[in-house]
Amino acid sequence: MQKFNCLIVDDEPIARDILKTYCGHLDNLEVVGLCGNALQAKAVMQQQKVDILFLDINMPVMDGIAFLKTLKKPPEVIFTTAYKEHAVDAFDLAACDYLLKPFSLERFIIAVDKALEHLQEPPRPAAEAYHDKTTDYIFIKAGDKIYKIQHDELLYAEANGNYTKIVTAQHTLLPAMTFSSFEELMPATLFPRIHRSFIINKAKISHIEGNRVFINGTEIPIGQNYREGFLKSIGL
Image (cartoon, rainbow, N blue to C red):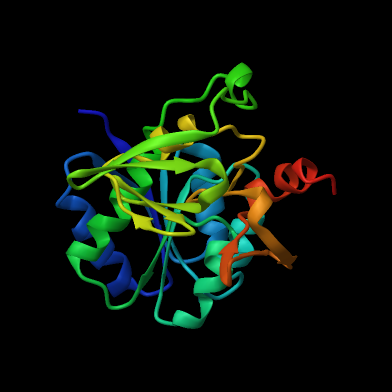
């Protein structure tokens, strides 16, 4: 079984212990460090490969959001905090998930599954990344129905565990397919991935404000790691 290295960063000893205990319930997780602040975490990450970072936001010396901004190649990040108002900033930085304390083991496992899905996604060949498909529609099976979706009808798609939420002008579908599988169906020039959890139809953007894209009244975050490529793709 493949093991994934986890680093827990939280200034509260009890919170660190809870996360360590939760990690212990999953055989494929290996806790490689427990840190009370961001500087300790930085030292560990310089010496040790980290796949999943459990990161508190409110910490002394440097908060979790500021710390993540210093990482050039961040691992999968799961923020943990008692303050839900930080959620917007967390997803702006393309965090994998956001756990609001106190959280259950079930909610913890859901977050870890999202991180593992990202870690286990096969890399897409560079030649295929901007390859336009010859058709302008796809077929999607959801439940006992198969839907034909024209490219022009699709608004955006969102990762949802082992499912993908597909939002069109007429439907919201939840087919049993991974986000990466859906991404492979779509021409990247028309449907860029702007966040670890979102693919959008560029033609449906009404406007962009800060780190948000607005489509049909819905706000969609632009991940920090995707922002530069996305803006280039729309000529900015």
